[in-house]
Image (cartoon, rainbow, N blue to C red; front, side):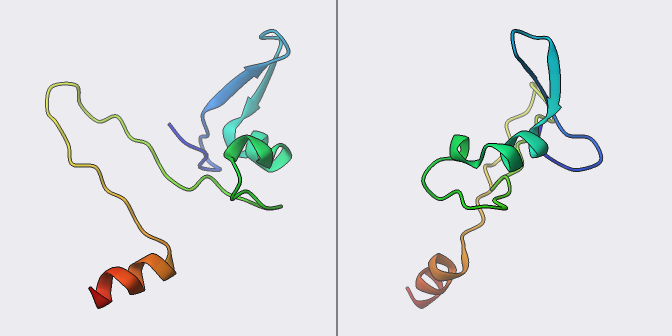
Length: 73
Protein backbone atom coordinates (compact mmCIF):
# COMPACT_ATOMS: atom_id res chain seq x y z
CA UNK A 1 0.00 0.00 0.00
CA UNK A 2 1.43 3.37 -0.84
CA UNK A 3 1.73 6.21 -3.30
CA UNK A 4 4.34 4.89 -5.75
CA UNK A 5 3.75 6.43 -9.16
CA UNK A 6 3.74 3.06 -10.96
CA UNK A 7 1.12 1.37 -8.82
CA UNK A 8 -0.43 3.60 -6.16
CA UNK A 9 -3.14 2.55 -3.78
CA UNK A 10 -6.50 3.78 -4.99
CA UNK A 11 -9.13 5.75 -3.09
CA UNK A 12 -12.78 5.80 -3.96
CA UNK A 13 -14.23 9.26 -3.44
CA UNK A 14 -17.57 10.91 -4.09
CA UNK A 15 -19.57 7.99 -2.68
CA UNK A 16 -17.41 5.43 -4.48
CA UNK A 17 -18.02 6.88 -7.93
CA UNK A 18 -14.54 8.29 -8.58
CA UNK A 19 -11.19 6.51 -8.21
CA UNK A 20 -7.97 8.44 -7.55
CA UNK A 21 -4.42 7.29 -6.84
CA UNK A 22 -3.15 7.93 -3.31
CA UNK A 23 -0.23 10.07 -4.51
CA UNK A 24 -2.50 12.24 -6.64
CA UNK A 25 -4.94 12.63 -3.74
CA UNK A 26 -2.12 13.79 -1.41
CA UNK A 27 -0.87 16.19 -4.08
CA UNK A 28 -4.33 17.73 -4.46
CA UNK A 29 -5.24 17.72 -0.74
CA UNK A 30 -2.03 17.91 1.35
CA UNK A 31 -4.05 19.00 4.41
CA UNK A 32 -5.04 15.36 4.88
CA UNK A 33 -1.40 14.58 5.73
CA UNK A 34 -1.38 16.79 8.84
CA UNK A 35 0.44 19.92 9.96
CA UNK A 36 3.77 19.08 8.27
CA UNK A 37 2.21 19.08 4.80
CA UNK A 38 3.36 21.70 2.32
CA UNK A 39 2.67 22.20 -1.34
CA UNK A 40 4.30 19.26 -3.08
CA UNK A 41 4.28 17.07 0.08
CA UNK A 42 4.87 13.38 -0.51
CA UNK A 43 3.76 10.38 1.50
CA UNK A 44 6.36 10.14 4.30
CA UNK A 45 6.39 6.36 4.57
CA UNK A 46 5.78 3.16 2.68
CA UNK A 47 3.56 0.60 4.34
CA UNK A 48 4.16 -3.01 3.33
CA UNK A 49 2.22 -6.13 4.17
CA UNK A 50 4.47 -9.07 3.33
CA UNK A 51 3.19 -11.94 5.42
CA UNK A 52 0.57 -12.52 8.09
CA UNK A 53 2.47 -15.58 9.32
CA UNK A 54 5.73 -13.91 10.33
CA UNK A 55 6.26 -10.71 12.31
CA UNK A 56 8.52 -8.09 10.76
CA UNK A 57 10.45 -5.30 12.45
CA UNK A 58 9.17 -1.78 11.99
CA UNK A 59 11.60 0.50 10.18
CA UNK A 60 11.53 4.26 10.63
CA UNK A 61 13.77 6.65 8.78
CA UNK A 62 14.40 9.94 10.61
CA UNK A 63 14.67 13.28 8.91
CA UNK A 64 18.12 14.88 8.70
CA UNK A 65 17.84 16.87 11.95
CA UNK A 66 16.69 13.88 14.00
CA UNK A 67 19.39 11.69 12.43
CA UNK A 68 22.09 14.20 13.47
CA UNK A 69 20.73 14.33 17.03
CA UNK A 70 20.56 10.55 17.31
CA UNK A 71 24.08 10.22 15.89
CA UNK A 72 25.42 12.66 18.50
CA UNK A 73 23.80 10.68 21.33
